[in-house]
Amino acid sequence: MSRLRQALPPLSTLLPFEAAARHQSFLRAAQELSLTQAAISRRIRALEESLGVALFERRHRQVVLTEAGRTLAEAVAGGLIDIAECAQRLRHRQPPHEVVLFAELYVAMYWLVPRLNDFHRRHPRISVRINASSQPLVQAMEPFDLAMQCTDRPSGLLAPLLSVPDEVFPVCSPALTEPHAWSIETLLSRPLLHYRESDNDAWMSWRTWLDRVGHPQPPPAPTSGQLFDSYPVMLQAAMNGHGVCLGYGGIGQLVRKGELVRPVVESIRLDAGMSVYRARHADDRPAVDSVLDWLAEILTTPERLQRED
Image 1 (tube, rainbow, N blue to C red):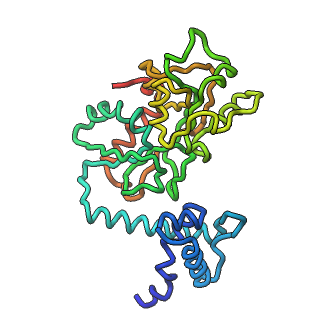
Image 2: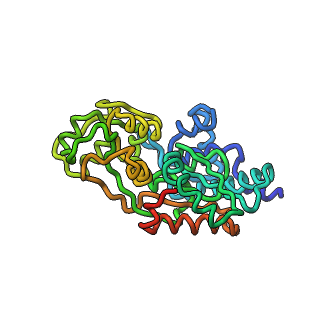
Image 3: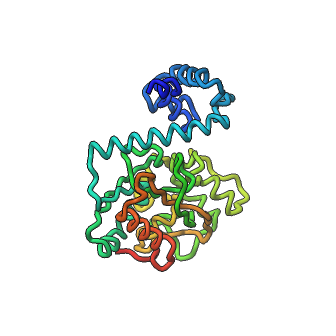
């Protein structure tokens, strides 16, 4: 045990390092851990001095993991995840037939929940507990067995088991539309609704969408319309006639039910739009296998994507 203690770096540096490596930011790590940015920097430097290697490359307003940093980040994150999951299981013994499924909030509301009856008809003894969140899975507040989220959102050390295509297209209330499809010019004359998360690469902004459909005019800035922090709230605003927002395949049921319509024919295909992940502790659980097989079936079979209960 004494040799283990001598080999380990200062334990007080590991949580700050893991957070900084995950966020690629000392500031975000400080905010997550309720520390100052200077405190994070000091602990990272102490860790680097203990190991004798640079873990981050300091750039202007940015830090990037070095090769040594990536190696350590994988080991530290894996160890901390294992400890956290073990502690959580000891605190709350999970029933063998319960599966915790982490899902993005809009996916849970508009895609997953309408289909759950199908799963329960097939597997009446398995309970699926949905942990819906607007945060990426790396910020999940409790352990999960499986996760569904947009492919481009941060997933930490978890690699996707399954990735499927998606589609991005404008949607609005039927009250705003006309008998024929709009032109892009007509679309731009309507109020546009913006999702704040489209500032990052995981969500497509109007600017990016218009550029990819080949619109020649300068696309709108996020200030030209209403801005939302919640994607489901933005969808509700669109259903209530406040404007046009960008929709994804996960909201297909709203279009099929006529609560939203697609006012233009243009759309963007994403080759890997939605991904499914499996936590390492869930590798040997038959109930998790059943949920995973069901998700794979309904995600990869076009006919089943049209089903709604």
